[in-house]
Image (tube, rainbow, N blue to C red):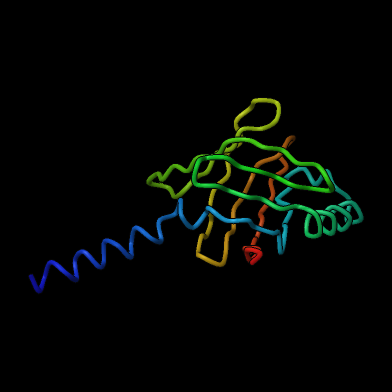
Length: 136
């Protein structure tokens, strides 16, 4: 019995902090880095996009696999799912066009999310996010 209780407690704590549960939150973008191998953005464009993304982009991941992106008054509702591979954690979202987008989670904690997402034409982005506190 002495061994069973700590084992159950550890299992409970581990399940409460699963990657899916940690993802289920509303996240704001604190920083964005452009991993643009073709350097298709000018420094001025990068500055403008960075400011826009940091002030308007919000992601919400829900336990029912629904996913919402809000930006500049636009709202897109889609689906998301998480996959753990030998190379790390990936999450997938469906786009409004019905395509599947992949992102690699670099770090995920209760109060921190960093991931890389590929765009078009060799444009990739690294997003660093923090949760938005729930309104009471």
